[in-house]
Image (cartoon, rainbow over all chains, first blue to last red; front, side, top):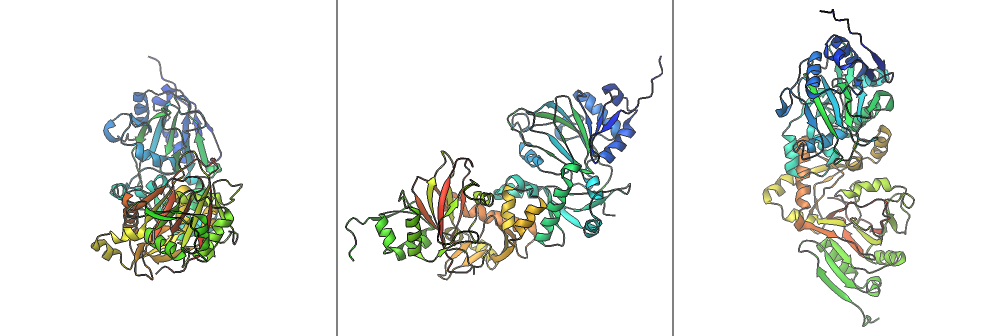
Length: 282
Length: 279
């Protein structure tokens, strides 16, 4: 029996404020030996890219479990969740996914939102379309002018899935609106103070209004900060090749899909890590 | 002066609740002799269609002036037709017109909105680009009494920037500030006109019912817009070249149906100044 050699993390930064590429092999990743370093990098860099790592479904599930608690989705149990706009493959979620074309984070109605998503590409859309964009909202917060930080300190925002529906269907019928409203709302901090003391911005298409300020000011804040946080400097846009996987820290980023032809056959699979920290004001 | 023996004047309903078609000759229309009848019909029927009347710009202006005071908005040239097109070479403000693909009335940001718009087709796309109108008098009248009572006296904040979010939901900060510079306006949800008739004031600028919590407010506005735009209150006008349409802006909503923005679609519009404030 040979003694396993210690696995070393191989990583390179993509942009100063966001994104790191991980270049370790499948076997090295599945060994779990660099899980702690990967988690630390994830929180700091927002998004990690594993170019053509080519995980099979069960390998992605196994790798997910090396990083934390696997969060099952829908009827898929401990398996990957397919993501496509093709109504034949995924009839129920095509509608919800339209909202994914706008900047958002997942789980705004949960006290503890998911920690991270791991997304792999099975069938890419044509180059130049269907990229996944990730914006680092830790970096974006840190780079704000002090007076803005002071102004938004302690503000809370009502988030609701029905608000995001208006982004792609501004003239819904009442039944559709009521259906979305049934999913509820949540009041969240605009600035999330994490356990480690770092702060991130909580924004996105579910953000309906800032509590206690007028419509005009509220829209200036929510659109202004989203505009700020999604400027090129804080954003990594991943152009997919089959076999690529990316992970993003859902608690310190916004993400979106960039537009693509819904009939092009783009197919992704996703796993998630359970949240470990509640949205927190202080 | 005697009317010409050639004078034509035939009025017929397009649908039971909205729209009349008027077949008339230009001379009759330009003479102003049917002015009162046209104004009354417009108020009763919401929309008047003059099929393939083929008015020139000068004739359209002349006709407009027979009906009232010709109006113009800030940025529009006085006494000229206004081009409605997505071609920025013809209209540099074409982007703002993208809100017109959603139900609205013109002038929700002013106290006294324009009375009517008169629009002629100049260039048409091969498909799409219809104009839809709904009769907000008829829609109000048909509401059940309970809902009429519930909405009586309610006021709504309207803001132009809300309508711009319909087509550009993720604006930049600068864009948002430019839109917001136009301000907002508080107007009644039910407009009681001098005539005593009532119409619903809705559309893409409607932001919040004053004093109502946001989800409830949104649901009420969506419910009423869905009601007012039910097929029985709607006229969908498929344009032919040379058609001219007048609509009572104070008792209707309108929108354009989608079309290819590079199609060159061009409409020429004139307006009648408002004569009555929201009340």
